[in-house]
Image (cartoon, rainbow, N blue to C red; front, side, top):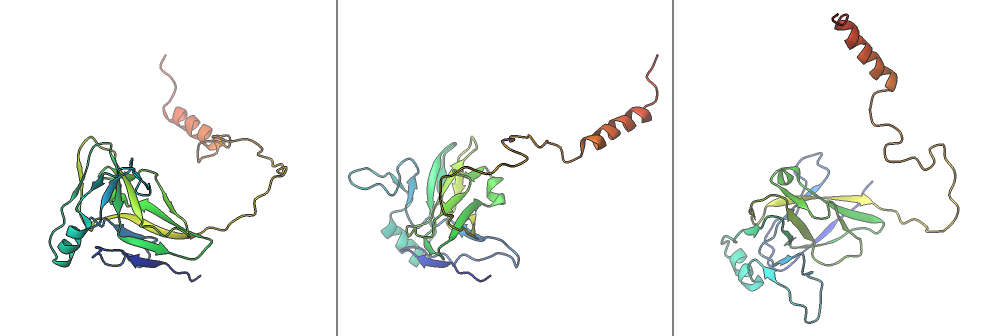
Length: 207
């Protein structure tokens, strides 16, 4: 199955095009573009009117000059427990009936950072900048550097179902859930046999 994913570079984004890092990698690595403004997650960048936005990082005109002159862009410091919207510098486009999902990279999660919504969903008709809502789960201040690969993007099929209201069919399982099918990967009789074997190997109980 052949599909496509188009990236549009935004102002002051000097980063290379996202790519697969190995031959069989499932996701494209997405990096922090700190040459663009970061924003507090509590103050949505999509709010309009007189709502104040507390922008973080380097002003975009200064960042553009830094990027053009290949000067170092300062890191972003995320406070303990804080959620911050980290820019990526890209807009995306892909076929309808598809969804782009963003997952945190495993190496980044070991540092204590996660996506605040666990998995980010990007719809096929969204044309704004892709942001990463990162949360610092540690008690320490963590630094994010310009160009750090933070997330992985995976494009998946997402068929649109026909929505209706009707009576649902009956199944043998019914309403059973929350562990109703059991919790162990081993059949119950195998577990019982193992316990019996352990008791036999231990010998008779002391008198």
